[in-house]
Image (cartoon, rainbow, N blue to C red):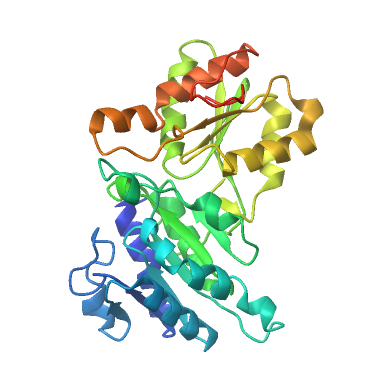
Length: 339
């Protein structure tokens, strides 16, 4: 299969869908004449023209609202946020309009729109550019939330997101746009709401998504040398959630470590731990552990940033703790199941 960078896989998905459906357009800051802040939309202006690849002012609230209105009128916008930190400027539009118009109009208006862009921390961008937003947006019914870890997943899931009649939050990573992976030459789609087992194992399960998939795979390789067999479940869809795949992993390994970029307090890892406890309590041989960012705003200084972010070493430490059915908090939280 062809090897594509993540940015190329995303571009391919958007371009294929735009060729298929003239009602699809891309809009955001620097997506057109600059070819995208991360060159994700490179060449698309030349192919599709300025009416379908649209540069916007620095006004997320404005162009998110414009996209929502266009979706209500029958088009299928792809709205790029240069970073999902900036989506918080458009929070009212995304939550009060995109997520709720279908219900508030009694089904008269659908909002088939994709909000996409990089999520979470990159390197040395400080707290205002390092927010992980999946826990925020997954809180609200009416939104679908997707986070991708590989070019293969990015292409197939983005095509499904564009075709979906609901608003979809599509989370990428600035750190992964250059990551390469195999992508089939033929057209394909991956349905939303289906997790993927990236690595099989017998002793414990890492549950994660986005770029933390790669940290979990690295931790699993380290643990294998110590005789610990870890499987890695990539949720891919945060909402809708693949409960069947999640609970099947619990039933197989009986130990779970959830790895979530972002803060532990009121995060997706806490929600997942609660659901596992409610549905699989008798299957667990140890508490569900969480590995998250430290509970502080992201520092700018590189040495301090390294103390906040998740590393394969911290993930491996949590795995050793749950296999031994012991261990204490590694991030200052009072919950003994956090690392």
